[in-house]
Length: 64
Image 1 (cartoon, rainbow, N blue to C red):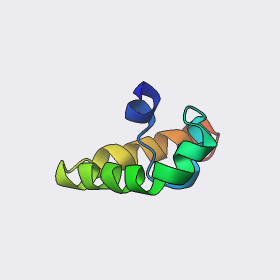
Image 2 (image 1 turned 90 degrees about the vertical axis):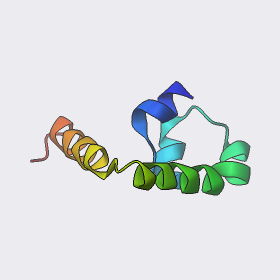
Image 3 (image 1 turned 135 degrees about the vertical axis):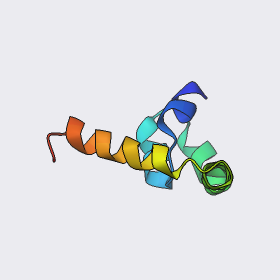
Image 4 (image 1 turned 180 degrees about the horizontal axis):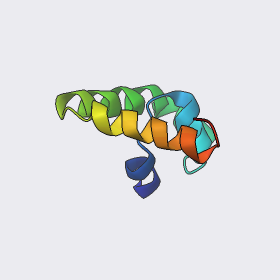
């Protein structure tokens, strides 16, 4: 769960990329989990955090 809290996956692909939840769990609960994470981000006005996270990932990959 700490990997989910640190990375804040917003899509099923991002959730799968974490590699911390089994394939069957993602298949059964992934959509609901992503929906809840997105709702939490929206309710707590964390979009700026998500934008900064995405920019950091691009910079870390050598993309400016």
